[in-house]
Image (cartoon, rainbow, N blue to C red; front, side, top):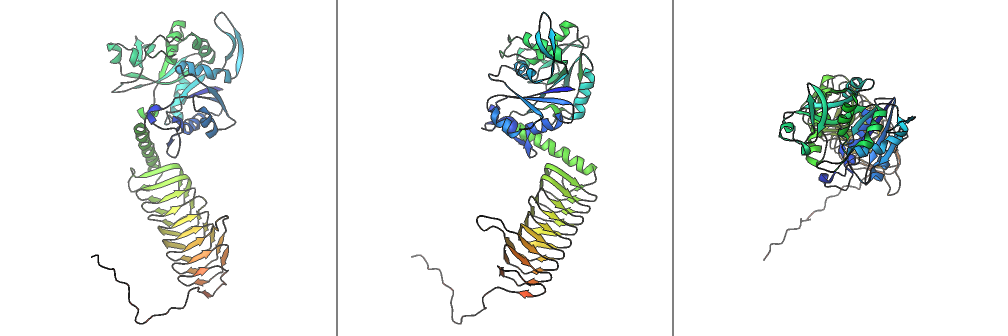
Length: 450
């Protein structure tokens, strides 16, 4: 069993936004969602999120039965924040001179809602370091430790953490910093938190002061380290958010390439969800993948495409400048070309829509050719309707299919047709006025200004 406290009460003033900081998106989902996903990799964990002002908005965004909530108002520091979470955890009775009442029995992992890239593998090392009855800190060595609390050691052993605002000149030269992430024995944490004072430069109850209390009790204080410094970087501004977005996207690109995906430029792909690729997939520049996207073997995504919650079959070619919206399911060897949009539609094998088309709420059969400028008119102003295009249909350019309508197998629709009734199979259907030429007609001439 593991208790997890996620501190998410920060107001995020430097974000200059009405949106709570932990709801700002990174890779298409809120910062807090990344931290929760990592915490949920520990299936036995009980998770409590500490929120502050505006916490109702955060709760509404993450309503889930596996989460407990605590509120920190006013915000008096990280130690005070963790204290608000303790009543949410399973406890055992404990009575002694210092503490009366229920004390959490499981070790407690402290995470931060604005530190989205922390990895489960790093946290496992930290938990293993804590073992039974030790306080474990996640620390890092930084070339420029400015702004961070410093790890103070004596004879190699951690004795305390000093915040930069309270550090002297010698302590500011220390390069080992506190990331804030730690694992503490549950009973000891409940014993220490009420003892914290706020006699410091910020007048707050620092969680880091539990280190000195642990040392005073003779409890071992151990450390573990992340594989990369960006794992523990927090977000306090839009600039920091953008910087971590690029790091996350680079990590995603490297994972895709390691799995065999060909990327024209790893710096110009955005994965804002889950991208699952088969063998020999290639992706050109400036493509965005949102939600859950599945690309089959041999799929080629050309430049400047946006694909959201879609499935693309093997050997298909998408783009350039195509958009696949939620519910788009393409079978093998489908071509969706430049400036073609597909939404809530299935397209069967070997069909093509190569230019300037909209396919919405449609079922398209095999070997269908959709001409340039074709649209399915799926919305009547109140309700959506479905278009059915059967196998081997040829649709001429600039055709409008006013749903609900069915185009029969093998039918041909002449260019410029507005189809309002079903088109019979194996016939040519045309809807357009008779062509005429008017002799003697002259085009208007623009009047010259006086």
